[in-house]
Each structure stands twice: as structure tokens, then as C-alpha cells.
Length: 91
Image (cartoon, rainbow, N blue to C red; front, side, top):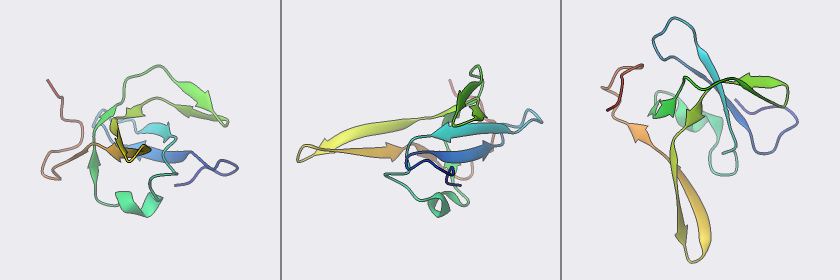
């Protein structure tokens, strides 16, 4: 969902299968709308120390790639096959 009073931040509740959901904020609203993530599996780091942004604690980071087309920066979140279960460890 979009974070109130922020033009950049989206808030995610990630299920990493630890039994405790991980709230993560990401400054990607310029590139994505919240509805685009329904049913998607994103690559994320969920064991980071909490960091407060806009009064909300964020304990994770979504992994993305930034690339340029004609000098314009674009961002693409790394999305995984939906058959990979939440909480799968990557090596």
C-alpha cells in the first residue's frame, strides 16, 4: 500500500515463513503501483535491523535492478516464479 504523506514509499508486509510478518518500505512508487504486486513473489532480504521511515519500522529490502534507456533510469523489481514458496532461502 502507499504510505500516507509520501510520494515515494510503498509499504509491504512480507511473509518469510518465520511466523512473524516483516514490514518493509521501499521507495518505488515512481515505478510501481501497489496493485501490481497481488499474487507476486518478490526477492527480498528480511533480516535487516529495523529502520524507521515516515514513522514506520522497515526490517527488509526488496531487491531490484536499475538500468537506463536513452539516459532515463528505470527500476525493475526481481520477481520469482510463483511456484517458489515464501521464505525459501537463496544460495
